[in-house]
Image (cartoon, rainbow, N blue to C red; front, side, top):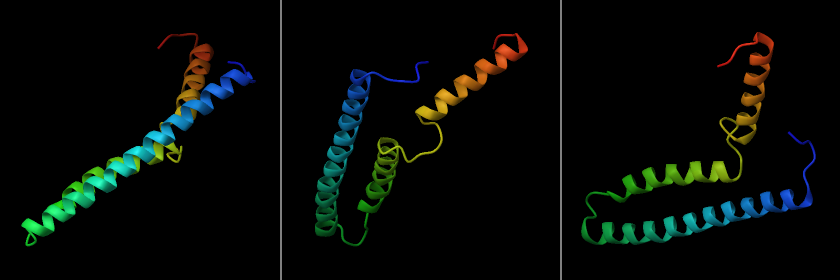
Length: 100
C-alpha cells in the first residue's frame, strides 16, 4: 500500500466523507420529523398507551449506529480495523508459509 496519497485521492475521500455526513444529517432530520408526527398521533388518539416509544427506541438505535459509523467513533470493525487485520493475516501467512 502506498503511504502517501495524491491530492485527488484525498479529495475523493473527503468528498465521500462529506456525502456520508450529509446522509446522516438527512437521516436525523427525517427521524425528528417522523417522530414528532408519531408523537402527535399517539397523544391525540391513544394517549393511554405510548407506542411511539418503540419507534423512538428502535429507530434511535439505528440512528446512533449510523452516526457512530459516519463520524468514525466506533473503534471496532472500522476501516482501520480491516486494514490492520488484513496486514496481520498476510504477515501470519508469510511467516507460516501457508494459505488461509
